[in-house]
Amino acid sequence: MLQAQLTIDPAHRVAPVRRRTFGTFVEHLGRCVYTGIYEPGHPTADAEGFRGDVLALTRELGVTTVRYPGGNFVSGYRWEDGVGPRERRPRRLDLAWHSTETNEIGVDEFVRWSRLAGLEPMMAVNLGTRGVAEAVDLLEYCNIPSGTTLSDLRVAGGAKEPHDIRMWCLGNEMDGPWQIGHKTAHEYGRLAAETARAMRMVDPGLELVACGSSGSSMPTFGSWETTVLEETYDLVDHISCHAYYEEKDGDLGGFLACATDMEHFISTVVSIADQVGARLGSGKKISVSFDEWNIWYLSRHQSAPPPPDWPVAPPLLEDHYHLADAVAFGGLLVTLLRHSDRVAAACLAQLVNVIAPIMTEPGGRAWRQTTFHPFAQAARYASGDVLLTEPVGPSYETGEFGQVPVLHTVATHDDRFTTVFAVNRSVTEPLELELDTRALGAVRIAEATTLTHEDVYARNTADDPERVVPRPNTSHRGDPARIVLPPVSWNVIRLARS
Ligand code: AHR
Image 1 (cartoon, helix red, strand yellow):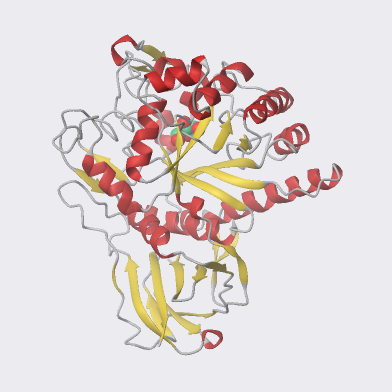
Image 2 (cartoon, protein in one colour; image 1 turned 90 degrees about the vertical axis):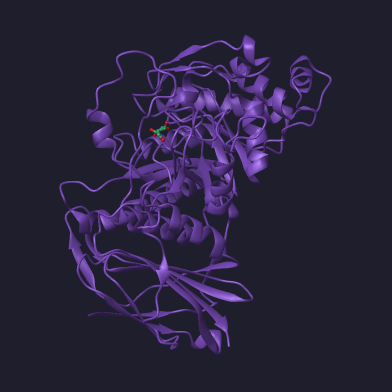
């Protein structure tokens, strides 16, 4: 059995837990919106067509914010298509996902759904095919109470109160050649700056996100952030990061350590932002909005042929996650929390059906994928301050990241509980964890759970939705100093004052 030690000390405070870490993402893509959050006629749908089963699971997931409407979709989107009487809304080609967009759901319906789910909406504007004027129009439509043509249009559509959306993304993945209206860093930086300047004329208090890189392996990674921030530094609050991971070439050990890349991504972007700030003589700090992250078997998606026609809401990117995916995913959550000093927001991409923790059958059941559980537990139990924890223990060799620690952890601490989130990345070995809790005073284990399975590729399905769920870990036998973490496992240990 492997052995590791972990010291938990409230003095090792990183930052408060940021509630926006537990954001997610709803894009007009595949079945995320249609037959995901919205399906009139579904047995659980309300009068507006929102699925009650998905709303209940969204609340259970503990999501705090939700980014909308894309993603790649936003770069060809005309927001006006989605407002006003439904029968007059146009059907359009969605070039990003080779689909037909019916526009049954638009900004007003989305904001209503967000409020029903108890979420803060986060809006992206189209800086692919559109620009400053359309972004300002959308802002006026959403946030001005009334008295202008656009705000009165919203009121006439039934949304009497302004949507009051505080956080806005200035485009999506504009560094990616796949993006409609893809731009160079300089072109995008100028457009983002001018859009931000005009949006701030409407509302100086908005929080604005400039597009960073679509991944740390982009050829422009680093230089993109530098140029974009040189153009936008005083006008934006956050820079985005996006990252997706998958097991490649059967390298499970390397995959379980994919958070190493996220770690490097965040640290690099933060240091670039600080260098640009220093060069500009600015006292301001830019934070990271990690507004797309997940496990995504992108290589399978890329090798699938595009649909022959332009279907409405086809099943796209419907990855079915197994235990190992959930454990790698838990590692990404640990990393986001560990960087709470600079990661101000994050969005799990996406919420329903599309690389999602929640799956639905059209007209039928909804269920929790394996990845639902680490997210729900972290959203529920991470509270108070984030504490840095540095395990002393074994490491292993990976092809992609060199030597990485077997145990990956973070803790949070409030006046009632200290919670340790821990991933055992070993593919074969259980790990005995010795906890040094002396700095916490007398504590007991109030609850310890483990998400694992003898088959690391076990999945949940509509017929067997509880195959992979967190189960009590009783290996501590009441001793807060010692607990065994099985191989390939996500663990939550809650310590309470005794
Ligand atoms: O989340 C799926 C897609 O991944 C998004 O549309 C895009 O922004 C990213 O490339």
